[in-house]
Image 1 (tube, helix red, strand yellow):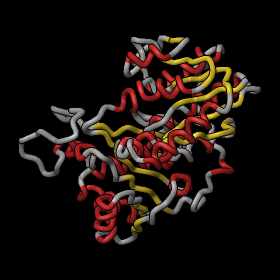
Image 2: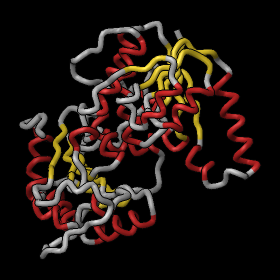
Image 3: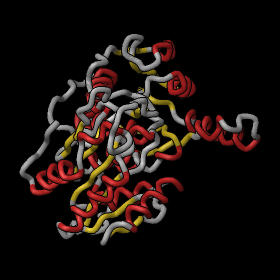
Image 4: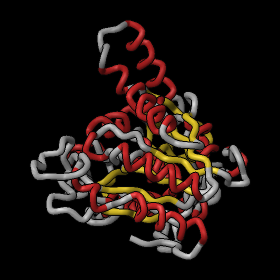
Length: 346
């Protein structure tokens, strides 16, 4: 049997589909999988040994120049790759109109979430087989259920396994002499205050650990360099591929992150990590895995689910909700995870 998975973005969402793939590969060892994914995240499906072919698309880039001859040519090439093979099952794991249209372009029996389950209900019109999966569950568990229904096996309820092949992710330093701070995120309301990062870095250095700081954008690079300049032993990482960053994460003693895709990568690699949530709620899409802790802000308007902070009261930091998640608290949580004295807490 040959199955096509459609899960195009974002980074965290693509990682969320890996445990379902592991379940399916164990339940049906003879099945092989192809994966349609946004080009920015095309490295991730290849980390799983059950994936044979990765078919990249560039929907985000194509939108910005839909009349471009180059973009039209790229789309036709992607469509050709999508239709080269007839699939026994096609699973749209995204549940959006754009992913449903992609599923309709492929050849095979189409499966997806039903009208009351999909993020965009009209997407269900494109599926020949619709599956009801309760909305009030974590995204990882919803996908595990969807794959089981689409491929006709009993959904497992054991510990999740992202199935990432260690041979494909080489740890930068297996001795674990550093921690990684994942400080970059698109929403300003999800950004942990810079002075708190500097204080955390001081606590890490006091414990004999160097701090590594990824920088995926110019703004993140500027912040990373400011943090590093105020820290005795910290280094800003150069531009890296996702696989390179995964190697850095896998060799880390521990990770502190905000609500960002790389935090899900740390969870998928079972690296002890504290993920800080202020504006957002980790209940349905938070990091999930071994040795993970959600440090939630305890504040009157948290989680606000807003991209800009609307709090107008007095506060020592911005966003104000992070006053309730102090650097000593975060470091104490991470220390317990790294020592193995606190396996999982929420």
